[in-house]
Length: 318
Image 1 (cartoon, rainbow, N blue to C red):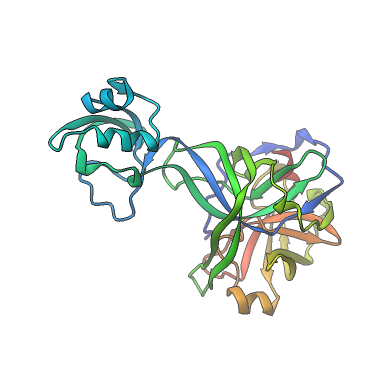
Image 2 (image 1 turned 120 degrees about the horizontal axis):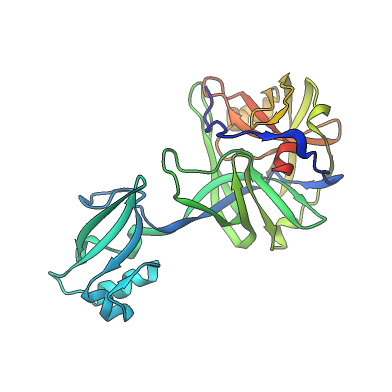
């Protein structure tokens, strides 16, 4: 059983797009902020009898909306608008809110105490790792699997930002229990996301901090990947660390899929530090024989020392 969602579609090899000869390999832990299609309701200690987690706000209307925004109804609501509306609401007044919930439209009426800017968000944060940066056009790719909220369609859009993280916090993996790694974002946005699919997130680098550690590798096609020793790259304390893995099975694929090859962690240092693969390592580059061959895509839930890699060819082409 795998932890991450399986691919929804497959893509033909017939593209055979020319890959860059070499790229900067990543391994940096990122906070990836993906934009929501609308303002979204999210409150960790959800006590609302009206809103549900992941409700998308389609529109809001009422006298308080008129006083705050100059319109009786607004459809492109922002968090800052919520505060203005609250300030213009009477204690017993209610406003009408139309939400999209599980792809169905709902209408609810809420009072002043049931709405707050802190209950809503315009982004969803994820922890994942940078895979590569193409120096030719400053494009990047990260994550190496689908970025989505389970069972919730049409919430995220192909827009967002990536941030470097400092002082990562590690929860080790255990048998049948996957750990995680995350950190607080630092600096400003280092890249803009403009594409999301089952192979991860792509975009353009805009910051200088993420370009400080330039470890450059040649790029391999899927057919070049072999069983045997390879290395998983993870940045730690602003230094790229290379951990030994053993590729145990190579899938010969006629179509692009996220599960290209299987591997096992054989480096005792990685096992000691992380307990195996943890959430947040998705997207970490994998190199073999001096070439970037792929990225960590999935972890095996029953044994976190085992994982699955995505061929870098598919990640670059799609």
